[in-house]
Image (spheres, rainbow, N blue to C red):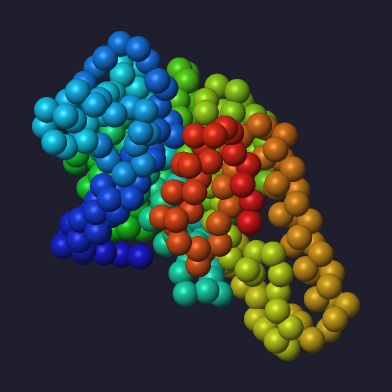
Length: 294
């Protein structure tokens, strides 16, 4: 989706409201430790843990304040964003790519709000764009510009390329979000290495067509990344059953691989509410490691 300069600021203001009112506190409590050396006092935000409230400051000011400890101060965060053409295919109101971009933008803004260093790697089968780590307010605007305004040079996917780029950039432990429909193969080795080095969270955005074709007669199938096409008769029950079995097997294989590499996994449908999905994920994260599938 291409946007104008004025739209970038509109998107920023819209998402900033969501971040401040619904997600900021949950994000902090989901990804921060609980140290003992006091760093600062700040106002309570929805989702903050009650046990972190500083009742002395609260009593003096009449407003809720919480203690933020030194070890809670700063994360190093990388957000890897799949921008390949498969994200544009959709049978629902929202495309996978639009949801991926929204998730990436919200995560970037959460990091900036929390004063964490955040970087974005936008990829297809090549690196389409890179934002170096920053915790300044302008990083959110740069992220929106990169994700929504700049079109991709390639239509293909290589998660392996994105992971290799990350490995070359960051050797120290970081929080890594990988956002994709995961319609790709041959990247498990790199995924395992990233999971060993970093705190890896895979956010999978899917469309019903990724898992099953409907019985609607003759349909033209376009492999959007390769440019090939063909006609399929979905009324042929034997053929449809074979195709849908293959699609389910691909999803099952992905699910097993993500379990094997010991990363956290959130799967959501392109029509799911991204904000509600993040809120649920952050809440579950506070209780322990996640592997949440649809």
